[in-house]
Image 1 (cartoon, rainbow, N blue to C red):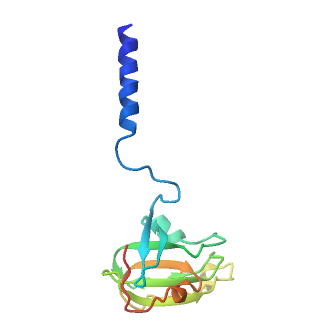
Image 2 (cartoon, rainbow, N blue to C red):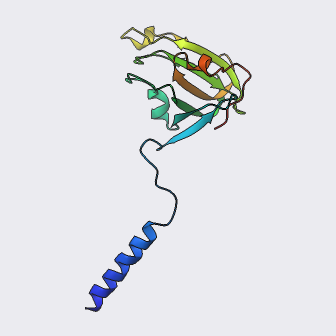
Image 3 (tube, rainbow, N blue to C red):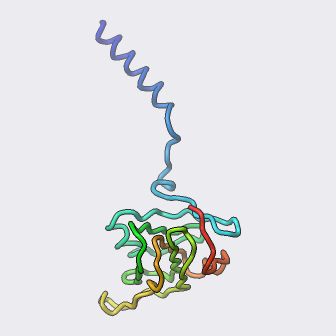
Length: 153
């Protein structure tokens, strides 16, 4: 009888504590952040932090909604080139320095149609960058993004 009461008390305590703590994260919010543009508009961007995520990026995806993006976090500033191998849709690729200031934009970057990775062109990497934001093709212009703008995230 004592064991049952102890178990019931532990269960009640666990239920009470379950309501405490940080707000639950929805699947839509998991590993994402809000990126805010100078005009006040924003997108929710998936955060690419691990090497495997940095390499895969938008490969094999059929779409990217206009209010979404993919944000790549490089460990240190560098001249990072991107390619469109196995990417199925045009993308705007936006490179930012360590202060999150845009240093380069590749607008409406077309998918690579070759089945050989070695035949796909490289884009960007002309300036030191630490962050790269990918948006659906045409969205950088729609949001009025320009080299020199600073983004918040």
